[in-house]
Amino acid sequence: MLDIYVDADACPVKQEVCRVAERYGLKVTFVSNSRMRIPEQDAVELVVVTGKFDAADDWIAEHVTENDIVVTADIPLASRCIKNRARVLGPAGQRFTAANIGSTLATRDLMSELRGAGAITGGPPPFQKQDRSRFLQGLDQVVQDVKKCGA
Image (cartoon, rainbow, N blue to C red; front, side, top):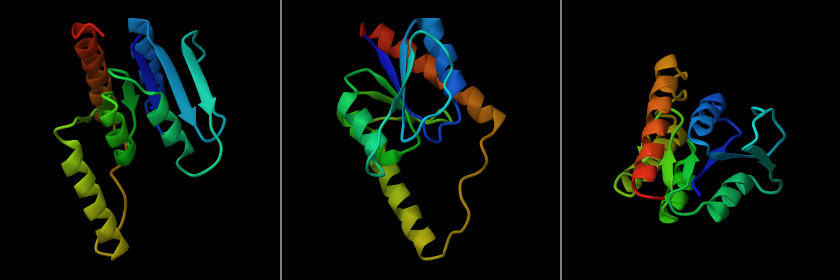
């Protein structure tokens, strides 16, 4: 069965994930380092992990299987999930694939070095309404793609 795993600690699209999952009858697992409010739906659960900083990432990477969907902005986690043949989508609707994850990781590392050297200050732009819309379209498309594959 196709499941959706959400790296939930800083995810801005929790409600959207639940709307799409409910439409398709999919299970959603929010994974977090702390308790949080999640939508009250039958097929939605919260898994709280403790321990090291990347405990939620480790839990998702260990549980995700082929054609599951992972929602995360964490590029290293996206890479790990792609190796497990999962489908990965960022909160602004960007798809991470085997074809683009290498360059995405390299860009992330470069930007991290530039920030560390003080060449770049500030963070990503604020989350916008169009990001939410792009995410909804992207998640819907990923679910349809997986269903077409017969998963």
